[in-house]
Length: 255
Image (cartoon, rainbow, N blue to C red):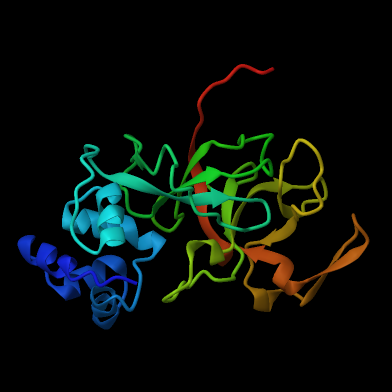
């Protein structure tokens, strides 16, 4: 990894200190020092807040991090922008964007109250084809920052709990994030389900519960499929990383 000593000078130009960068990235000052020394990479969810703090576009920041020195791509968007963090898949693999991706950042929607707590992804497969087509841009908001009713029909970005706390040397594709729609069955059970046009056994459905784990039994019987679902297969509100708020796709006529 490259040293990023240029960040210190850029902070000084803006009148900020390392502690200000730490507060913006929600990490400790020693972790910021590790970034400057090249011992820790800037993580995907830290790109936008760092770019905002330094007064750069996310594209310029990414280019600067790749070069180990401050650069300007010449492509600056007015106002805050959201970096495209990767491609979501039905299996939970968050795939990095290809180097020649035509879109790497998008403007914040004009009706967004704040860019904080917003995340942009590309729908990478057909796991939600009935609602969100493959290739569509998804902007999702942290429900703890942006009010959004968590009601049946909502589409959640689910944190599958593997590789989310990305440390030094761990790539973005180690994260486990996927999208599912909140569905309530005729018997009143809450589920998070995929919506492919054709059934794919690799796209799992999970029970959804708003109750803390200690208030439920460790094993829940799923009468519909005649199997037992262990507690780690129950998704709770703490596992919801974000709620889909906007979907953008280029219109193409059906074949």
